[in-house]
Length: 160
Image (cartoon, rainbow, N blue to C red):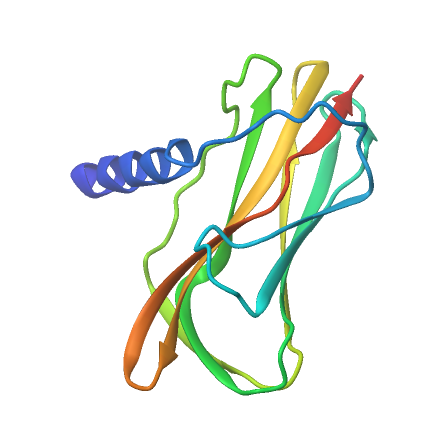
């Protein structure tokens, strides 16, 4: 049992630290949108919403959403939670970690669909932080599976 917990913790840290994050030189907004890292035309966009400022030790909510921009039906499969969340301090050090479950689900997205997920966190030290989310899933297309990874733009969060 201890080995299983260690493996899950290691897997979560590996996944979270494997996502590169760029710290933007821009003022924050209430939401950020990102595109696909696949390079091809992708029928999806991602959006991240969170407060611009919170107090130290105040729990806050982050919402990430995946929007399908086409009318055609698509089947996707993903982990139970579509998004993983990354919070980094000014030096680029990731401050959050959590276990990621590998159990998967399949969904049929019809029309212009939207999937939203939330994440809550509490930061114990004042400063400037940068938050992003990554959606990872597979699209079934004509019997073939295509892996997709889409990262939101980084959002700035002030903690006082």
